[in-house]
Length: 204
Image (cartoon, rainbow, N blue to C red):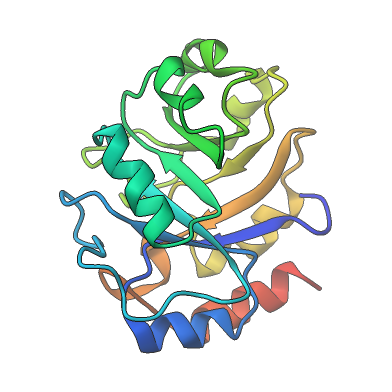
């Protein structure tokens, strides 16, 4: 992984925890607005980050609701984790858009092609029972088959013990990592000590 990679901590919800995690200086912090998630932040959190970029995560949501939420919460990025079409993504271009894909095999990258030049970033996650937050890694070697032009974030079960593996991973289009369930003491509540240690190791 190249130096200066983006560190995104996703699934934030509690005001005090948001403040403590932001003090670790992650680049982006993610807030899940999908009501099917145990980490859903509806109603909106009483505190949002002031330094880290704000990412709102949605799953097949009515686009006008996405737009209104993005305005109300002053989101910097919109992350789409469902079956949103390229046309849907194109309507959100006033924000930077991250389109998530669940990956297990090389052929799974075919689904990214219609979004080239439409989404700003991709996020590659593990295929699992849940939309995200499964806490399981996929075989990162499959990413050698990704030859698209859109930069991506690596997600899916990255945990406190994975710092060395992350630092040793290289792909020309990988710009960052997404951390979530493996750093939690409960859904939506991050273990600040584990995050502090991991981020320090990554940024050495």
